[in-house]
Amino acid sequence: MTVLEYFEKAQKEKWAIGQFNFSTDEQLKGIMIAAQNLKSPIIIGTSEGESKFLGLKQAVALIKSFKDETGFPVFLNLDHGKNLDYIKEAINFGYDCVHFDGSELSLPDNIKLTKEIVKAGSKKDVLIEGEIGIIGKSTEVKEENLTRLEDVKYFVQETGVNSLAISIGNVHGVYQKMPKIDFERLKKIRARIETPLVLHGGSGVSEKDIKKLIKEGIVKININTELRVAWKKALKATIKQSGREEIKPYKILLPASRAIQKVVEEKIKLFGSQNKA
Ligand code: 13P
Image (cartoon, rainbow, N blue to C red; front, side, top):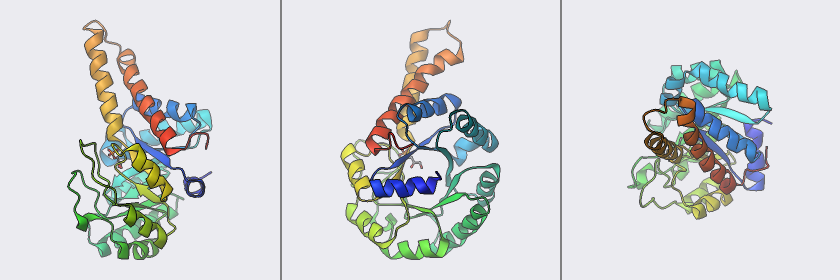
């Protein structure tokens, strides 16, 4: 099945597919083991920064090796791509999906560049995620940054994106007090378009809100910060406990990999994507 087919299935059955970001091998292993244990389809994300650390080609090769070995539905997405040349490189190297983040541009510019990426992607059957409305990194969500209802249908029709990231009070990161999700806006967006809807900033969103978001039509949820926090916490603890004499990276990194696996397993269960592979 393609990613789009999974989105359609998720939409019909009211569950969501998780996108989990990585930049190192042991993180990817943790994510993959979780997905396989729970038989969940999965999207693996790399931001521009993460993919530059890994290498675009290397990221594609790593995912392909898992796919070949397991026959598992795992898809690779370039997350928050902003540089057109770089996004096109990702498309050419074999990414399954790319997210073009033109959210900070004017609507006409966002449409123009998104269209260019949709055109590049269509030659290689790559799924394109667009974005309207600014998803910030602060709990102070400004009304003017939320996805404007009047833009939704127009943006989708003009660009032909396959999925759409929206700003409805979601923010990147985890905060003591998370902003309120604007469910009414989500409902109105859903009523205007049938395009699969994506929630960025999945870390820190309460279980109750995640369930409601899925019920109201979100089919893809991105998680990064919670994985990074779990990874660093486990790594710090292992280095502290293991003492000066332990220098084997594969021993030091294993608990960090397991910590990632645990978070991903929890999210898969929450998103309802287990046994959907
Ligand atoms: P979080 O870091 O809040 O989980 O957001 C991740 C994300 O949206 C990646 O695109």
